Every structure is written in structure tokens, then in C-alpha cells.
Image 1 (cartoon, rainbow, N blue to C red):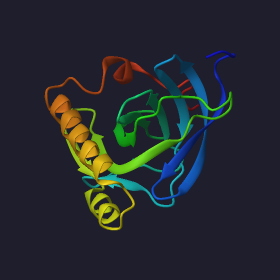
Image 2 (spheres, one colour; image 1 turned 180 degrees about the vertical axis):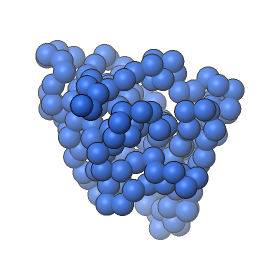
Image 3 (spheres, rainbow, N blue to C red; image 1 turned 135 degrees about the vertical axis):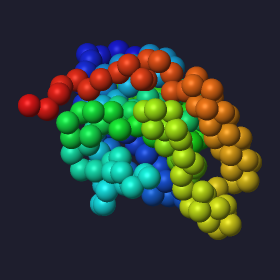
Image 4 (cartoon, rainbow, N blue to C red; image 1 turned 45 degrees about the vertical axis):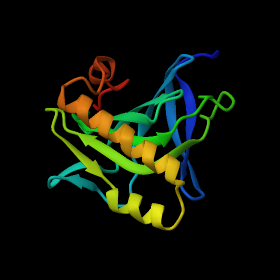
Length: 178
């Protein structure tokens, strides 16, 4: 993975069945197994967990996109760049991380998500969307089964304080707000 870092990149994100979005970001690190991308959070309305806003316009995420894993991880920061938690999308594993120098390979969302608070508490998100997508045939049953299995595995690792990894917990934004 060549090229100067950091550099602009777009995360190509597919929400099943065929909603494809491109999210701007800055590629901070790239290896054959992982991309690290810093990206502003842009939402139509604030996302809340347990009554607290965890994602809003002006917030920031540092995404870890992996090769051949069933998840990605975003470390979320508020406007003051304090960590508010970690967002894990269950995704279809990709064999290729980059599609050219300015875009990721397509990251295909499998609906289920895991929110992890900085203190280690966690919540499973979007189970209704997952069930709805399964009923409508938007997600093949084999992918759905594996997404559920991998989510349970991540939840178990989170409960045992083995997830998210230390390198995810340690990372900070490139710049703090002034």
C-alpha cells in the first residue's frame, strides 16, 4: 500500500440491498490487513445511546477497516475530541482493502452493530433492521447466521475486556479543536 500518508480517501459503504455511499476521510495508516481512516461524522439526526448523544455533526470517527474480518471498528469523539465510545459494524469480509489510491474497497454492512461505551458496557444495535432485512431477503441467511455468530463473539470479547484492541483504545485524532 503505497503513497504518502495521511492522504484523502473515501470509504465506499454499501447498505444492503444496494444503497452505496462514499464517506470522505483521511487515510492515516495502511497495511495489508488494516486501514485506519479519520472521518467527520455527518448524520441527519443525533444518535443517542442510553440518553446520551454519541454521534452528531461535528463529531469525529477513526475507523479501522480490516481485511477478511466480519467487523469494522470506529472510535467516536465528540466536538471537544473526547472519546464517547466505539461503534462496530458487522460487515461482509473483504479480501481487498483499497480500490485505487482514493477509495476503499466496498464495505458491505450486515445491519447488526455493537456500541461499546468507554467503560466497557455495550449494547447490540439495529436488531430490528437486521430481522427486517432477513425477512425481505436483503441479506442471505448464511451471511445473517455468520453476522450473528461474529457479533456474539465480539460481545463476549468485550465483556472479557479484550475488545476493542489496545491500539484502537489508544488512538487519538490528528488535531484537537482550538
